[in-house]
Length: 614
Image (cartoon, rainbow, N blue to C red; front, side):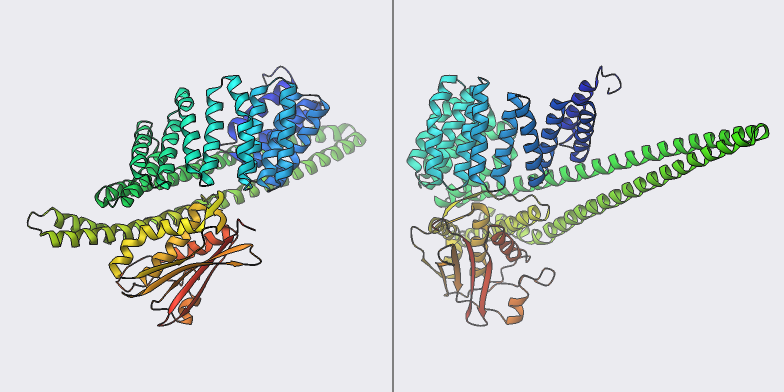
């Protein structure tokens, strides 16, 4: 296609299009095309092509999470677009710089670049994209915990969006306001704006957005403890997700319904929905693993083909060079017979050619060696991924076989007609206990798998520690009652931390489950908080009166390959990755996990999170 292009400018455009189309499945190839476009544009003095090449290279670097490189490339692109007075190029470069600086944590400069992009869009009479820059500014304020400012700013652009009569834009603005109020715990306002957004979302006809809207309404109602309405809208969201075959949506709607039915103490329905969550999570893990394996295999095949082509090209060049060398020798011999001086000159020329050929061969040899090393590295990565997959399947087959068999056995006993009411109650309690342990095991397993494959992303928000603690205690209340363990909390209403909600919940829930596991019947578990480091950190403590541990056991807790889960006081099982993940998640959120323990007295597990009150 490049050979048929009418000009060098057209060739630059083709290379940039090839870069954009290939960057998703092969980032290295995408960057290679963009680099070729930049080289050609620089040789031909194509300043617009140079600016576009810098922007494309910056986009590739941003996708690969190399922020300093993408920052420098977008900056070069913005300077060139500005010198050319190219308004579309200036706007997209400023917007990209806003994204990069936001990810680097520089809120002020990020907002400045978004504002500059907005001004350029307005100068180009592009009101729609100027509003999207306003939304980016509001989003940046929200991500930096300035939720009130984010809400006010978002509401200020709503009249402009309505004037544009763009239903998709209006729905996003109103939905963002609702999510902001929900994050603040102002659930009535959150419901009001989410319901306002619903008609606009339904007009767009996007099933994912519609399903998300109903799910958000159900989630807000669940925070308000209005389980009836939470169930109603969660079921609506579930139906829309199911119709659109949205596995992630179905999973989160199922999890919300399981939580609602647990609050209603309808354990039969809660068990059904939890089982649905487990099944869907298995499906998502398998899909993601298959996708990663396919991508690695594609890269492997691409490198393999490129190596074969390089070897063929090298062979052809060597044959051509050898033929040329033989001809040169023949001609030199003939000429030497006629003219010694001219023969000497030709011999010297031939010597120069051979030297260049040797240099060319050495260069090609080095290229082949580099390609060989790249192929070996990618083979090692594929082997690591395969090892993780095998380890995951091994844990699933070993640790899930026993509880699943017990669930089937308990269910079979419940189906018998001659089971008394007393036995039925006992079996139901046992079944719920087994399901709860199995769900905890599966959650740990899935988090471990995602962490091993680099799939964990952190979404920071303000967390009410007391509310998070109460939700987890409510979930484990029946387990405590079964072992006659007293749960006590000493947490103020205004204690707040900044962290990823899912990771913080995971750490607290695992520490509580471990405390229940190793505390004898009739014991006590206390949850309390304190402020560390001049109120910069919130420390959450889980103190139990359980069996405690030796110094040797405590030192081996976080030693990968040494730590092994032990049976609890009621012979509860596990597979030993929960505490390793707790430590990793606490550190990823800017905190740390610590443990104090005395054999026969009990243990104190605590972790810190950045304070939202500093």
